[in-house]
Every structure is written in C-alpha cells, then in structure tokens.
Length: 79
Image (cartoon, rainbow, N blue to C red; front, top):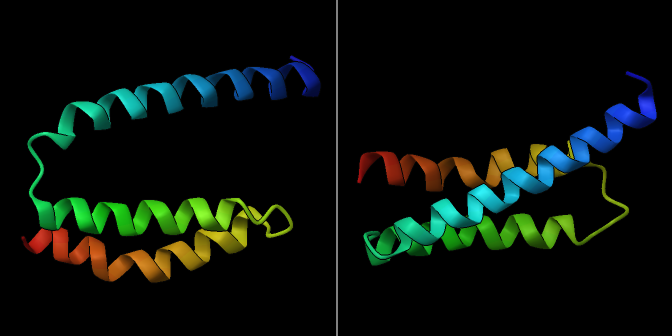
C-alpha cells in the first residue's frame, strides 16, 4: 500500500473510531456519577481546546494532556 492510500485508510479508521467512541460514551453517560462526569468533561474539554490550536504539534498536545489528566484519572480510579 502506498503512502497516500495508507493515509486515506488511516483517516477512514480514525473517523470510524470517533463514531464508535461517541456511541460508547452516549451509552455510558446515564450511569456515570456527577463527579465522574465532571472529571471526564475536564479532560475532554481540555483536549478539544488543545486540538483546536492547529499550530500545536500532536506530540506536544499529548505531553500536556498526560500531565494535566494524570490527577483526574487517578481520582477516577480511586473513586
């Protein structure tokens, strides 16, 4: 598979996975506690805000998200 075809296939897989993610989260929201929803929203909204900064490289976004989300993830695991 050439580079262009590989890129298009990965794009397709990413879009399909995003759709699966939204469906899965829609199914979970009703059973999540308010505290869990608040932590999830904090992580999700921070990620989206970073992704909207087009000039920021994905590597930098991932590094920042790992740092910021670590405490929220630990709270969720302990809850």
